[in-house]
Length: 232
Length: 353
Image (cartoon, rainbow over all chains, first blue to last red; front, side, top):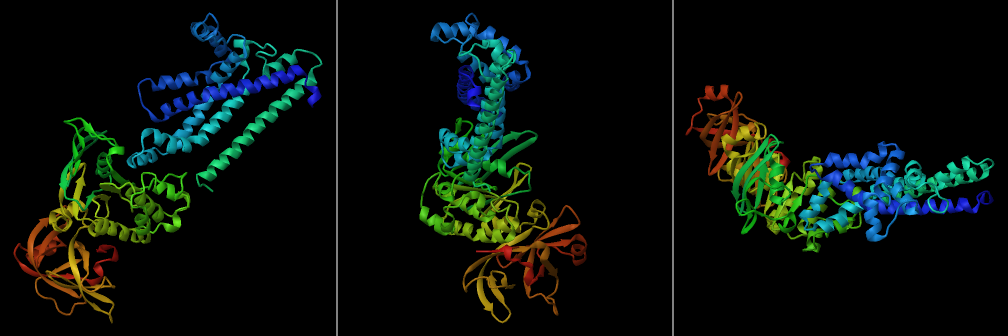
């Protein structure tokens, strides 16, 4: 299988992994915070925030990609500020692919983590408060350990989504080999070239292996955590 | 001294409760939905009242006029929840010491937790969980202990397993408690003071013996649950028959079982519906306990029943009869009659220290 994948394909695989990992790790803290707020707080505009978070899930990915291009392009209102103050550029770079993947994976992560928060009995936090624990300590010692299975599920789901993101990525940053060409865009590109079936099959197998691997790792971690929580 | 004055609107429900009680065990009694849990949550700091004042001893926990509202962390109040609320990801030992390790060895010993320390909460029985929750609250060295129906989720044998622990806390540790319950037997056994809540308001408050012996309390606690509580001393044992003789100011009572050693104080609750009244000393009766009493009060109930307050010596008893028999017997305040109490009327759950 290895020799069916040329250097271009390997580049796409490594880039995909990097993009998905950066997207997941970057989005995770924000997703945890948003999920917590949605699960536990009531405030005006809660439904608006909820809708905004879920927008990438229901919009056509091409539309999301186009909006990213408008907002985060070098002339865009957010993109220009980021470029001028931090020198961060998204347009047609792998960082842009990571941003697109993160935005697309975000709703899935928030949903899973929110379920996790809703499964944590808020009464346990009350109990910790009556035992004298500060809010920070309650968060660290009670809430976070108990919500960890949900966070993990969200992260794995987000990673898988980021790995497979196609529409928004290709619209926002195109598919430049070595820069923004991930596994899905590489497969799509190869489909246009006659005689590249072996490379396509190779990339498809890699995709399946990565997805299965992510699932197995999450299963294993979930079981370990369940054991720690004392569940049979 | 615990003083509570809480006004809190919760949807359609209005909690508007004021009472002041001495240290000791105060039972908060009422039907479900009467505001018991909201009241203790406000004392714990988990629920912020709309107005009022809450103080334990000299410590003001909440005062709406001075905008004082101590967070739960600063109140030093132990809270034992109905559902225990142990942290599922921590061992029993880590649960116990989460808030502190005050007097750890003694607490573990008193509650019999030695063999549970390395276990996880998921593997504990309901009774064990409540004991751990109680220990965890005590190790914070609280100035007040709140218990929200800690035994409600347990079956009778588990209840019987925990009640002696709570009695020991009351008698040995002498920690003040607010004990929420809707079980009169529990209240009669544990409490020194009784607060009866009805629809968010304090219907009556006072020493448990006094409140439960008042005919006016009968509709509040329910006709089946009504009954006086008296404090007696073990005066003798009838070993052949398996009976214990208890003495109190109104005479002697014989009850089944071994209720304690000679001279020991025993609190018993005599259900009002199990007290029979007779105008003349009855003869040829199977009941063992016949006490001469004076009628102090005759109260019309909500249904066909009447509650009759009785004085036996210096202790108050309560009887429940139908209006029909009250009229036929021409019961009146000041009348000298006889109260007949069947020895088996007082169940084991009605007997405490």
